[in-house]
Image: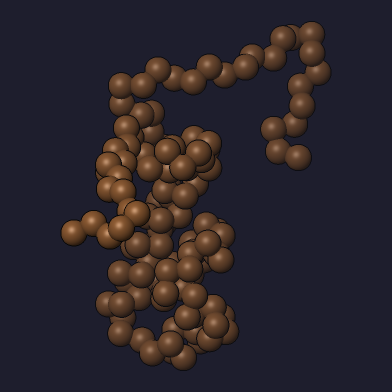
Length: 123
């Protein structure tokens, strides 16, 4: 039943990643996806260990508010590197694999001319 003054909205359909629809750049979307995968696997392992929050905090060398943030999905408060460190402290290994997306043309990569001075890749 509709309430007075309300209109039914059509469901939003995405054409790919919801992160793309939200306006994230491809590189930001990739980082979010990787972080989510690491978090999902880390949380599954933590739950399997059956540790109390106090025990988990001691194992990860973090304070209770950070344990709570971790267990309650506030993953934005942790860098990808920190999540990987947590995994290592819990005797997990991490693997990173970069792959070309299927069916997509490779992005064009700017090529530096030989006369230009090359900038360092990592400053």
